[in-house]
Length: 99
Image (tube, rainbow, N blue to C red; front, side):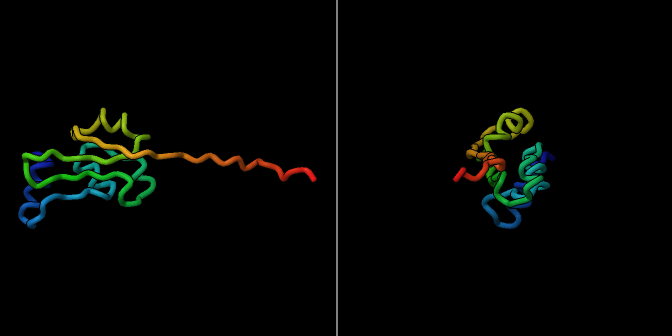
């Protein structure tokens, strides 16, 4: 039995319409690849896999645009949506203006 079949079967038995995989471990289990941002940040919502109970509905993945290319290569999930992730660089060497 495939991973998605097991997830869908368990969700159906529990009366759920879908499963949201939010933890790094569940994300990996449901899509077949890791989100390194989710692993390092460990904040729910940085990467999500939605697995609908109905087989007629494909799973959907929501990830940051920084990881999009690698996740598209590694995951069996085809519907991948992204959100922008900005890395802010601060210039910590700024000096005070001369007086």
